[in-house]
Length: 113
Length: 114
Picture (cartoon, one colour):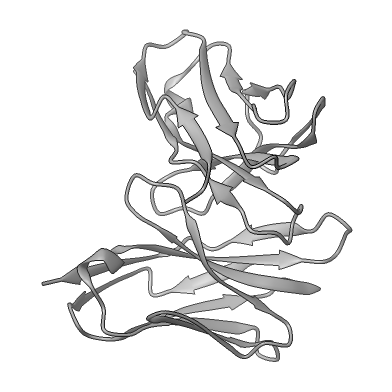
């Protein structure tokens, strides 16, 4: 059982609202990731972090931002949500970058009206 | 271009039957290949990892194979159960850099009927 938690699990909000998706892990992993997943499509990396105060953009361009002030916490923020941001957001962590096993949270399903 | 292709896209089988899912990749240089199971509304969970030197690895009723020469992997599920209904995702890691990079397939959606 992976010790990585995401909140909220489901969120429905109106256009223009600011939202923060929370992600916390208790495994002490330095590496953390945010993926976006749409039905029938592969996971796309939107942000990653290899440690405190380290954040990088992933392969898929995203208007969201992330922060890593504490090892266990990796929140994702959208300053002004739009319907195009509707998607499933998955947070993950790993002991090793790239080749290591990813431990995923249960996901946050975001719907922007 | 590094890619991971999975087939079939979806599959329906009866409980108790066996099935095989396929993963073809073009990722190079290859580091390892993992199969993940993703239940509906949940995050993916790793089932097996295959490295270059491994041909077969089992995890209960799941058996993964790897042919590094043809760049193909398969996941065989024996005596399927209703709880096997899920998306199965193939993920290939390269070793082109010290950090590595992951390439995801789109998954095979398996439905097991009673």
